Image (cartoon, rainbow, N blue to C red):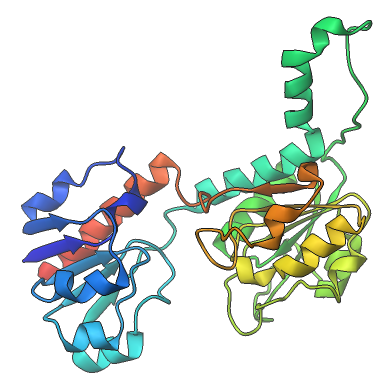
Length: 308
């Protein structure tokens, strides 16, 4: 078997791929452009891709037998045509839950605790203070705050447990309408937005969730409300939330995802004037070292299972 990794750079150079040498001949490409894809996969048996698109044209003109997605999402593969041509497609689920939950909490703590502000003061200005402390930027406890979760899947449940541990009152909105959880209160989206102090997004991007949060409902978020997006960029309308923040709405927005990645210089989030109200990280929630090791081990199992 010949195994080609098309975007090895997305897995990080601090994790090894040596274990795959026991499964066949391994070809590694750090990145692959759409123009390079066909030539690189034409004569390989197994393709490992994170974000490189494998469409009908690629599959029709190659000898691919298995596509391993180094992620959970499968939207970069033409699944219908793969099935028609008898090409197996395997993804990996559950590997990044702890990592995503951790970044969710980090976002919330940054906004609630004002860590960045007080860190800068401690390093630069504390030595000039006439008192032992600084209370110029109020911060708040999470205890007794209402935490609303949009999408109570595996990751949403992990966040709910952490919120519970901090003494928060957890409620959730099911984007599919099918999720029923007796442990937490299920509410409508409007109620969640109006009553939550903290709102975290952990759902998939689909027809129901595209622009789920926009100018028509973002305005009802409570003053001082914290909104963090660990789902997909298109769930929150970036133009609308940027405009609302710049026009003085008292909300904070943290996101690990944007509509087009890497972020474009024209993205309105980059133009928000009050930088203290926005956190943008480059799609790292899934990528703790432990999560990436779990991901690679799961890919190896998928390939081994296929070969066997």
